[in-house]
Image 1 (spheres, rainbow, N blue to C red):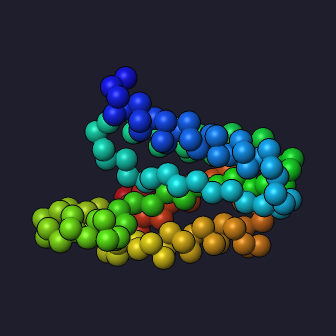
Image 2 (image 1 turned 180 degrees about the vertical axis):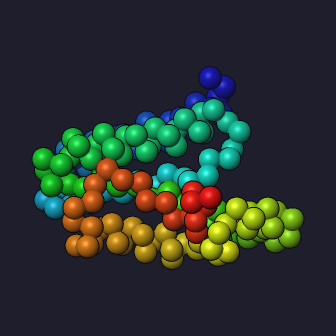
Length: 144
């Protein structure tokens, strides 16, 4: 693997597994929830990056089963393009924005608060029986 690909793999998979393992080892509370951030639209043409995002989704399912006996729910949230200060210059380009919005049935770019709301839902009592899922926050991107 190229050095850049190694960094992406370590950041996307190895670090996540280490954090989850530490979380389970500490078991700070029963009926806890652990969250992962994946991505809905893996458009970066880099095999290591794409593999790391797929690994996060599969690791979420596997660890949900492993942590279930401890009453710890494990879920992931997978946003699509999100309006942030980092992406603002990208979306300032009308051609790029149009291309993104052409694949966005709701016609709304998710914002950071939308991602936070999904995490709060999964952390709350309404999601007490939800584990092992990756919840897309994508304005309908996957429904196309």
